[in-house]
Image 1 (tube, rainbow, N blue to C red):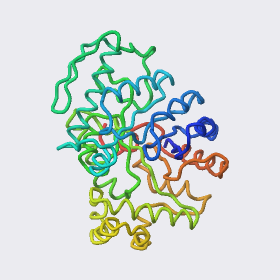
Image 2 (cartoon, one colour; image 1 turned 60 degrees about the horizontal axis):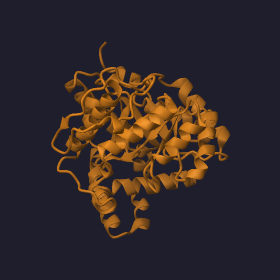
Image 3 (cartoon, rainbow, N blue to C red; image 1 turned 45 degrees about the vertical axis):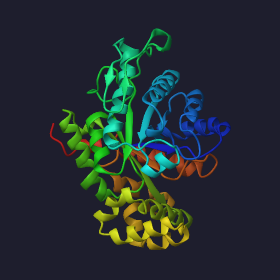
Image 4 (tube, rainbow, N blue to C red; image 1 turned 90 degrees about the horizontal axis):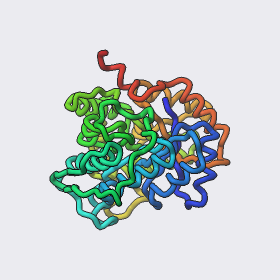
Length: 363
């Protein structure tokens, strides 16, 4: 499987050194996130200071931006990098969209994200193939593109290995979306090249809930599950401190009401309710102790440092096409361990997008 890294929340001045080190270590891609920094700005630096490393957003908050913003930014990054950029989008949750970004929450998040993707691809199709920009939907009406604002085609058009062959004409940059529940997983199967799995998951949740939803969406659109690369971010621990961190993060995510189905599947709804109550009162220190060892084992992988790659391989065999550890990559900290982990994960896993999901479908 492809083994990727996540960029830590650092200042832009630190990004070039991290990007070069990630490429030297042997990671397949470097993902940026939208936490304390804008996720797109580091991408320009990653493109400039590497030559083979793929990179992308995991994720950029889509509902905080217009489709035009996303289309132009992705186009420039794809052009700068020779097609190594992957646009990863996520909806975030209602409270953050309304109270952190000051933007409206849509009546149907799935419908709005679908339209955003369609509008983005309408821009790309216009720029790459000269088609007329004319999209009219529930959330967006986009009909104006004069030559002054048209960046022109990507030359040559990029064709990264993650791209589906079933996309429409303007689909020249792969789009991944992230989610926890079935609605967005179905949308990924219907229209995207990849799906970013939230770190709060279990293998059982992926095989019983997420993968069937992706397959349903793909079947509805006349596609196959192999057209969608499953990119998994996983909690992994080889030290007591890492286990404590994983426990705390699992407690935080499990307190989110929209992520409740993950806990419900395992019969832990009452614990999720208690976690939500603690979170609403700001009682963060009380939450990790509610995550039992059984829960920790379901939602994270723990083993000795030298055996962690094998444990991850066993856990995600037949599920993941790309794997990223929740622990961010920091150069100079366990470089040898990261290098060996990347080598083991890549050498012993599946090697093409969608192959993990291909096993269950007939040729």
